[in-house]
Length: 313
Image 1: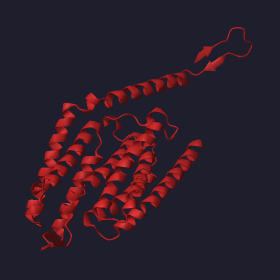
Image 2 (image 1 turned 45 degrees about the vertical axis):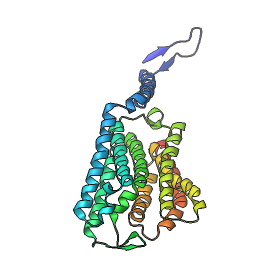
Image 3 (image 1 turned 90 degrees about the vertical axis):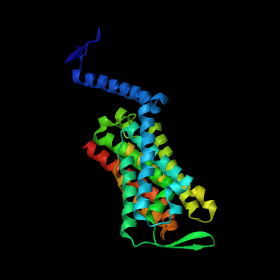
Image 4 (image 1 turned 180 degrees about the horizontal axis):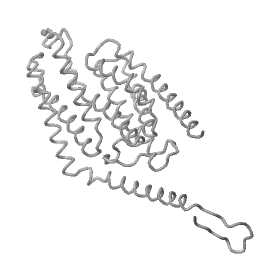
């Protein structure tokens, strides 16, 4: 116990528990260390470290090599559609692999590389398990009768990057909230590490908007590629898809689980199916992104209210 007496006062001396004072100073120290770590982690020189650049280079080459090998092994599409036959496809696969590998090494997050491997593996398995498609030529263009999953995987590389950006941000928030191997993360502390009041801080909002924006642009670009009309709807789609990705990110950075579960259960599988197969229902699914974003927000508010009530008991 530490005792503090105000000279000339007649009241009983004020008593301040030593432990509480220690916790306050410790909290201040943790916040200061967190801010210093954030500045160090996100400095340009650290981001452009040799380790990060080398990981990106190797990841890009490995991704391109593995996908090309899968095309050659399966032999389900003409050689003209193999990745190395097109500079655009080869560059796309290299960039996707490089960004995912560099991000994983730089941040310590596991979901980007695991997600990319799972996506490529799932597409390859579906092509292996599906009867070979029938190819023909019409008007100088190749036409296919059947599904070609790996080809869809290559063509939608930017969609996978947007999806992996959302899952990476969700992983960051939930790992820090629940302490799941969080010491291995090489990222700035989330707002919850400095203050546990679960408010949406400028940092949380900025991350959610940025990640949601990447996801929204990727989904809208895919919609443009498949010829969704009218084209005037594309800017609206950027906003609705961005909200569908950004709301779960904002929730996860505050330690809220239900919006992330909703995204993983409802958005990711449907996006995966409609993107790889170009299946029916894709445009309808795009229209539902706005209501889904609203539903995720309601889930976040409900979970936050329940957890606050439980903490106040």
